[in-house]
Length: 229
Image 1 (tube, rainbow, N blue to C red):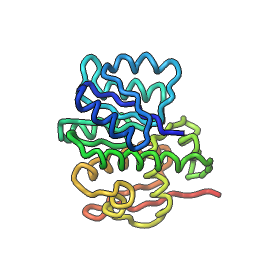
Image 2 (cartoon, rainbow, N blue to C red):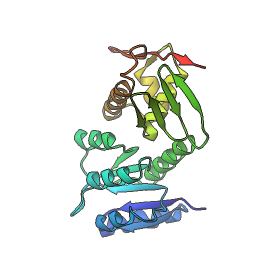
Image 3 (tube, rainbow, N blue to C red):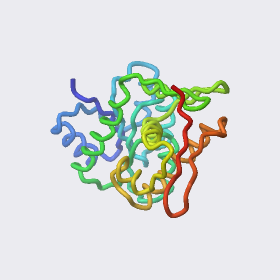
Image 4 (cartoon, one colour):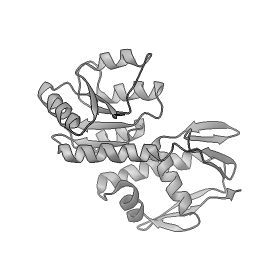
């Protein structure tokens, strides 16, 4: 079965180029120039495996559209296209729950690689693993972090980072180690995105004071998760 891509891009020339290239790579692409047409699909059949959203679109911008999609399809993988190479774009997208971003004009080969990486990460969580972390319980298949005070649905990126931290429990992990192994790049913006995800995990685990994700200035993070069997 082919991977079905939702492409939201209002530029007719760029959208057609992307659609044709992705179809040559054996993806099935549904291209929408009007984001309002996508909103109408959210309450019905939504047969896509990943979404590629341009940020600057008329009527509904990419960020607003992403919020609508995530509200209805919480773990739906998203990749943003942006013509603006600015920090606020990237961090805003990450906070919404985006899995990646790429600046326009983009190299189609790089775009395909990023899509495949996102899909690969998504496939890691098809088997169910239950992990007890202090007062919390993690269900990897549902991407669900449970606590008596409430449950949190993780994004794929958040769970990927959490599992990596669990693999290196009770050790010191350098920032470069995390970026090179999870993000496969190490620049200013990916470093800032890591800070966003670390802050989120600290917030999620705030009910258990025994869980520590401590920053070490200029080094990385000291991790201490009380794992219960």
